[in-house]
Length: 394
Image 1 (tube, rainbow, N blue to C red):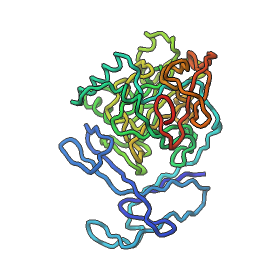
Image 2 (cartoon, rainbow, N blue to C red):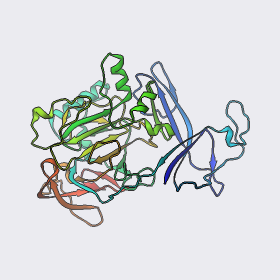
Image 3 (tube, one colour):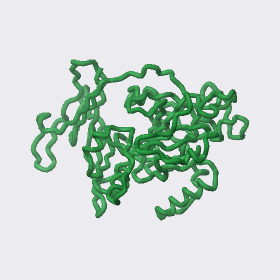
Image 4 (cartoon, rainbow, N blue to C red):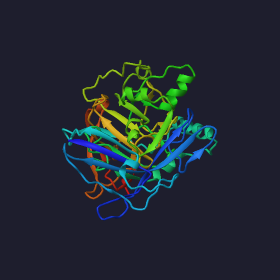
């Protein structure tokens, strides 16, 4: 069963009842040093040119050889520059992407490792100092962002089996949180950075004569097709193949520090000594925001990057997905978040009362390497529409 994404540019289209359907945008920023994920309006300066176009998107899941009447052209439209009336679809620029649908074969697959809430930094002097340095670099006032994040709720806009894009095996269990571009993101696990995908960063390294490690999370052929440094956002077809991301492999909590800090080669990864591997990926992150590199050891609550809206992204958000392997065709696995951001210790003052209506439940905490150690903790699983912070739902 193929899934087809169809996009029409710069026109209004109508649904079955004749009303005009809501459109979105397709934005592209062309610059070797562009850092904005998406501008609110079209802007042009010495460093970057951002172009926005009206875009209407249909995501259709249907059997092969099936005809579906999706929309009709809204009446009385004209081509903006020439003012020629639009009377035929041949006058409209249309893109589409067709892929075979691959269902998730085990939708109940769940890993027992509990994640730290990604918007909450641990109150560690090293992490706070690092974030303040980032703020200073941006000529902003340095604040204790960890305290603010503790109190801030973020809306889950798409969760398991989301009807927009979370119905493939590769993103079935993914969680989306709406957040402004530039929101600080913290490591949800103790682990090793195994992949960083950032085209602008890669291009800058290349221009400086530094060979950048290639990403293993996307299609290398697509990378070869785009050397312009163009950054995209919104809902255009081409955005499905261009994004920024970071991937972290969970490692044993007692993993030797020297080995953790050892940088991997271009073709190797951290040794998989555990029989229960887990990889966590952040997608759509802000360009040039990563402060860690491949091979770096990270800890829960450590600042690693900032959120963005790069790639196929209807709005700025964090896309978080978990996998049991880092293969291109890996299926997602369900992961839950620890309550309180304290390592899942339910004896803490931050622990939340268990209730059937808030999605919080006691589970066995994963020990070293993701193996349950018998300790009970409180956890939660975000559901679309809910607002969450480190303690669970609002």
